[in-house]
Image (cartoon, rainbow, N blue to C red):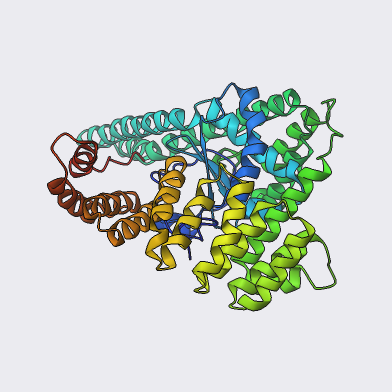
Length: 460
């Protein structure tokens, strides 16, 4: 697994995944606090293109929130603290059209623009206060009833004490239902403003309704986080069909990009399923992409390279085919052969920092010291646009070390470990680096920042 380009399913931490959005049941992986975060230039570029017009309609700057992709087969997306929209891979895999994903992102943008996560935190505090007050009143009633020898007073006090937490929860759930409906309405506004159909969003909620129907049939509607599915779906569909853009469809170009991303996800995350989902009888570009990736992921490097070369022949201007070839060669131990396709990928996608970092890694991995200056320059430029790629800093540290620049190597190691969450190791490397830098120099100051770093308290 590399440190860039499909990241490749590197594990990381998402601070405070407090959700306010579309969701099914929470998974064990999400509950563990260590979701598998995917970094991939092609997928991220597609999601950015999906959400940029929505953000503009919502009055949010294009860099006003980060989209984080989490490997999880459940259809789920939500707003998290730190202005993040978290999207499960299940959203992309299960959505047959771009419009379905755009509808999800529009709904989550409604939560983001409405400040719902912060509002939810405040409402949680209010619900706790309500529970505490009602419970305390009930407990006082119990004590007073018992002191007065009144069984009725004692029973009434006991009932009030037990009702306290329940009242707080119902207050909170009612607030959440209001948020969800507000996000629905906002999403419709954004889709209309961008001349896009809300049909994809309706299809998404139809999926919710189908999954929740049996359990919801006998449920207390006030004990649901979201409104009753059928009721919510009817409201959404009625409003959506009034839009003049209800019949709008995605362009063939956007549909192809969407299909390519779905194929890529299958190849990387479910390689054993690729042949079933994309049989050899399917000659489409996405099907070939999925099979090529699956071959590389399952150890068939020679077959994978042959399949990737066939893709390149069909679309010689598509940077991600060259990226894939370079990654497959690098991970198979052919660093020198990986350089040419990665250079081509960088030339076709010069702003893709992750690809540039992968190229720098390949240059360093050749063992050729004459390539170290280029490796360092390439890694540094890549990290300028991807400053949170911890693996990239560790590659840079290796290159610096081989050049004999030990202070720089220690500082890069400190950066990499800090981003990776190993604070103690980061501070250790920073102290070594600082001892070699002149006091007050840029390197000394950055090392001092790491030495002084205190992990923030996570808000839940």
